[in-house]
Length: 231
Image (cartoon, rainbow, N blue to C red):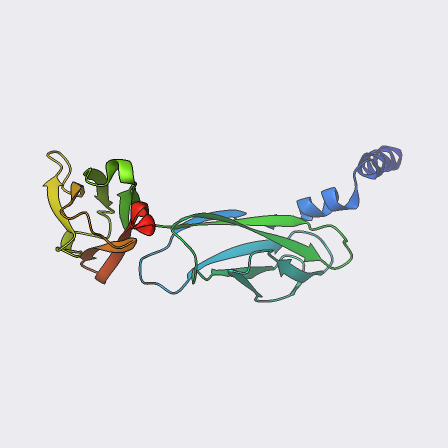
């Protein structure tokens, strides 16, 4: 019996020798999840996720650092030393200030004491919604088409935006008509028509909208008259 136990232990030891220490430790350190996706709610100054990790080994483990290359990510390690059978959490905060609408895939590498390589990479995927989408949002007139009208497709994110409140523009320069989509109440077509040839090089159309949890929001359409530079 002792010979059999010795052979089993020896076989396990030989088996483990073939694996790097990091591979063995990643089995000792486990996570509830290593990827979280979040939709940033409009008007919120941050988005936050919590990642929980467990020490399934027989010795304490220490988290040295949870690092992200993104300047929008801040991390807080709630308890650095994890005793055997215990867990801790890493709180990850995404700060959207200065960020455009879009998807941000943030990676956080977690380093443990005694290991040069990270034992885990956490993924925090944050989507900043585009509340008002204008396509195109830049219109340029040349001398060859200075009186031509343009169409702009306008879409509101109906999860947050429920009404188009105002379209602000210089009515001495342009005429703008709004054509609602027949099937989708959150979509419109804008027809922009120049009404005078003497127009400044640049001007703005401001699309304003609102929703139940939103104060008025604004999205610009940029109008350029490149031919005016030669006048």
